[in-house]
Image 1 (cartoon, rainbow, N blue to C red):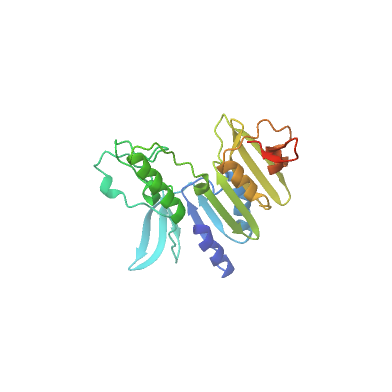
Image 2: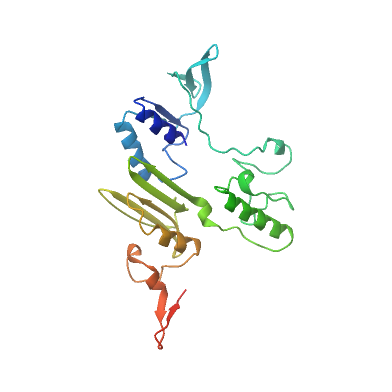
Length: 255
């Protein structure tokens, strides 16, 4: 991660500049508000940001880097260049195959490509964040190839954790809402929390500053448990709300 490198340089007394094509830092990990909390801390420590900018050329003096060019016109001098672009699937060989590719091979919920009978999983599909999730995707793709209709819905493949300047953050699922979603958020001096609800079911959450109860949210989201009929604030919901008490005193899972 580029911010990890920037954080290390700040600790060494350097003043790095972070350049990102996205309009906010940590755009994969957090929403713009939560990311902005970190950006402010980085700026206070001496880091500069150029967001929404694209590197189009590198300037050299022999074999020594001297700067970069942004968007074909704006030169930024430097004496060290760190490239942090994450994982990029090796999919160039598919250029003339007819298979639709974006950052990775584009797949549907069954991990099928646009070409009948062709599937993709793991880093090639841009879905994998860990070896276990890549293995699960391989299993799902294999089952569908065998004619067993199976959807890939491992929401925890979309889990990210961040911690800079003593501020921990955790995000799970789809935390950028669609127009139809309901967003519940709250914040105070040391905390920002947001949950996205779709058709009564939480589909994504961001916890920043205080990540307690993260296990609860991961469970609720991954098991698609509705909170629509629980008559309390979503922030007050707990496992107890999904149990009922039988006449014989037995607790029964009510979902």
